[in-house]
Length: 152
Picture 1: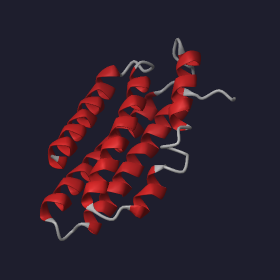
Picture 2: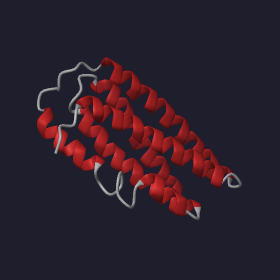
Picture 3: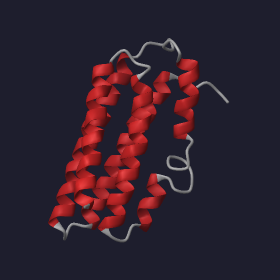
Picture 4: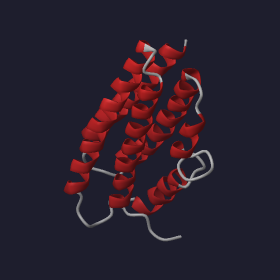
């Protein structure tokens, strides 16, 4: 297993936000006739774009050296990225094609937000810009709350 750099970890966070944006944009379009669903997914898509920019900016501030404790954290981060959800048969981009109704979309969005939240907690522990990651974590938690309330 090759080393997984902090820069790669943050780049994966950028890619995760892009996947979220694509998913939410596609779901907003798919359910455009349901104003509430469309509004929820449009709002989530817009927030994913903001997060993507935040991680891009963070990536630009990273030095070349790995943070203290990165070797152990690297294994954790790689395990999340290589999980079935991100890379396997259940990965986000493949799974969204089979979504037929908004309930499935909301359920999938909840699972996606929870997986990315775990990933962001891992990044938070490794960067000095913790307050930046904390803001995104708080936002991701609010996404989970919105989706949970909407599902009910």
